[in-house]
Amino acid sequence: MKSHTWNKHDCAKVVTSEIGAQEKPEIVDIGKQSIDISFKNMEPKPSTINLINETTGEQIKLDSDWMTLSPPNEGEAVYRLHFYWNGKGGAPLGESTYRFGVISSDTY
Figure 1: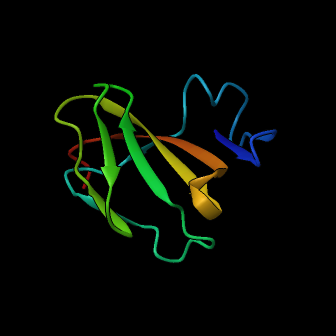
Figure 2: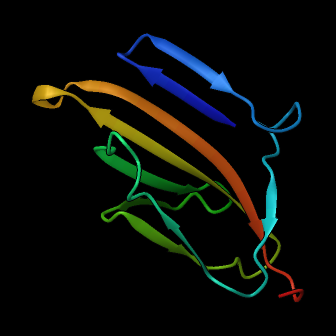
């Protein structure tokens, strides 16, 4: 599920898969491989990107235009990317979230 908020008042939620995606996002099998996710082509560039592991509660502020995501040790892990944009003087301009899940298997 994606949600977008701009200028503190205009919010929209965009569901990109089946109904109920908020409760159970799409789970992708990444096998035993790590995957790289790049944000370098995002325009406008977010002021802050946070990765939240909803399975463990861990929160990470990303300091670069890309991240490497390792497969979970057991079962599946659900993540939320939270993007923030600030305007002049640091005033909040907008935010967006994207939820996804990964699972590790012996397939890859």
